[in-house]
Image (tube, rainbow, N blue to C red; front, side, top):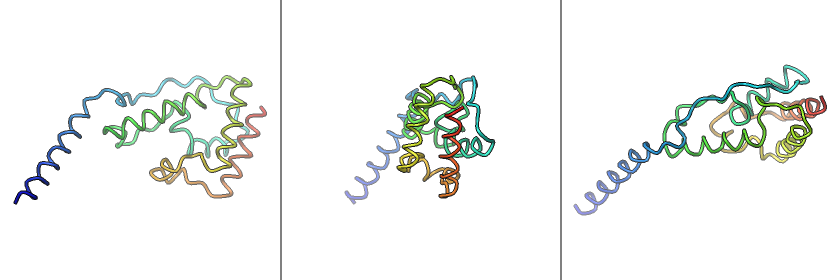
Length: 147
């Protein structure tokens, strides 16, 4: 009987902690800043692939899924979006050398399989790109960076 009681108390304590952390305000801002300016895309096909695989973290057009409203996952999502926008934001394009450098860094990360991150691809099947789509993305981003 003590084992059942201990299990029940453990489950109740876990549920209480999960409910309590929902009041932490971090991760609750699900709004997107205004769009400023996108790159001059080399093609609509490049933009479509980038939108599908990159925009949730690298633009001001984030689609906030249901799990982004439940802590502690909301904290991870918010952090990833903030960091992604800070690294490269396709909605706040300056057309300067810095954006070109950021695309070159992104190209290396795409080539090595770092981007899109595994965890993102796991819950976003639309971000899983075929080899042909990856080649098209790399060529399109390279061409866009040259503009």
